[in-house]
Length: 240
Image (cartoon, rainbow, N blue to C red; front, side, top):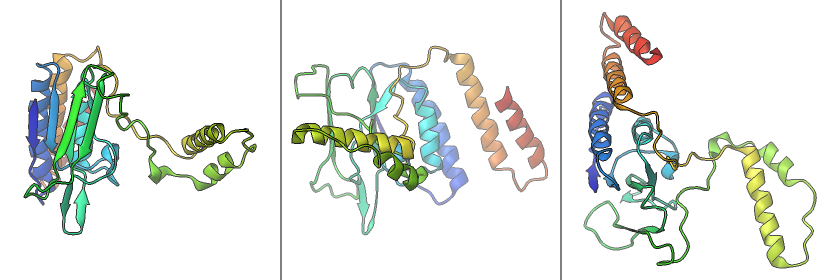
């Protein structure tokens, strides 16, 4: 199990550099253990776990964890961090897919913690019958920024639902709404619910590290005389 706390800073370049270095070490270590649980304060935003938008830290985290056989347990939209009027979802819990195949639960607790971060209780069990049916983990949701209201209205304005009992009518209505949402906006990406890709190896991992190193150098060199050369080196490595 890995417990994570990443510091926030107002200097974006320094923040991303520290995060990338940390994520490289964390993912390499996680690949040596199974099953794994990675949880903590990542100070990252992404629509995948309920944020209103995805920031640079969130994109880097998603990219790094896409190489691992893990899933996100966070569910719901309740903030995990609250300070005054500000709130966000920055405390995340990831586990190996093998741990998420049974009964799982994840909840933000309403108890005193002497911290701006709320307490989180999560459990996993290989016994599917221990706590009832499996709780879905962020499998339903849409990217509302791409919402097309005209398509939604068109999809909803189709043949009337004709059923004789209330239960069947409710099921048919929910299916109609889901289909309309699918037609009017893309779904949110599920956090790596597939097994680890078979083609990932040490060579590709080393290339990825070198690519990140070149990108960090190019990002810090925009005002330097040789910035064009450094950026060109990074782009060449990406193409290879």
